[in-house]
Length: 351
Image (cartoon, rainbow, N blue to C red; front, side, top):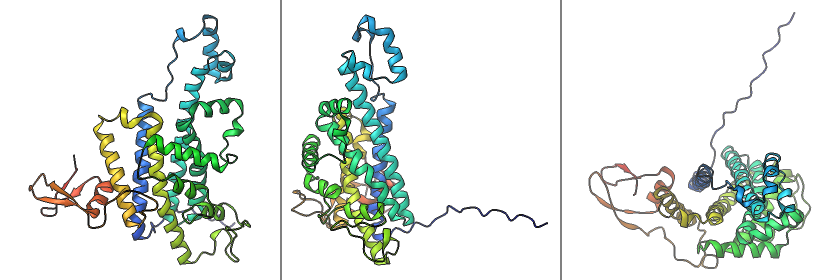
């Protein structure tokens, strides 16, 4: 009797094959995602997503029934009984928490697959969080009451797939006014996510990744290259460049939206850790833009660091040597959380 052959185990080891020129862009994406996750965890730990409801806020005859409502998540009862404000707070916080949780997971997996070179999976995973989750978060920031009313009266009207471009443009523009960040541009943010005819856009990459064959004008699948299966090395390099030319911009924007939803820059202005991470976020964003030649006067009306610009007067805590914080050291600070003294090579954090 022949012995059964042992089943082959699936090896999950893989090589990190991201091009060295794009390494900082990838690492900066990871930094931004970790920052978003840290803020999310802090919001949960500090019960910011928790809705406190006092018995005095309820009519006496509704208090006993209310406990059953919460247990069964029958939130329609709140609307029927006229507790619209309580309903709003519960839904507002729950939507933000779940949408950001979902967004973090999808983008984390997308970056993991990029490391392996599975870019079709990467682009497929990025579509939902960037095209759909983010739009609802923008809506909640810009007009939370409208979003809430449509949520319980006609949820199809806040469907990102059915929302007209004019409304999307309006929400993005208003969101930028709320967060007040000169490094971001509303037209560019719209184009990256929704404009199939724009030069800077994920639209074509998403369509070719999600669908085996596309026939739409501007995104037609090329002969002999279904679903990027037969991409040449040059094609793959261009796909990677497209990914890391656009994703850091949107992740930076998402972090700003997250801050804006709860006014975190004001609430946490005395929090040293938050302030330090926010500072690294901005420095990393500027350096990423320099490295990718992203900054264009037509896109960003702001004078940013050039490759030769330096921030002076950094003093080594060990040997007291004073040196400048240049682009290379900023990259090290953002990714590794330390810089190295030019003279004695001591590693230290900036306070």
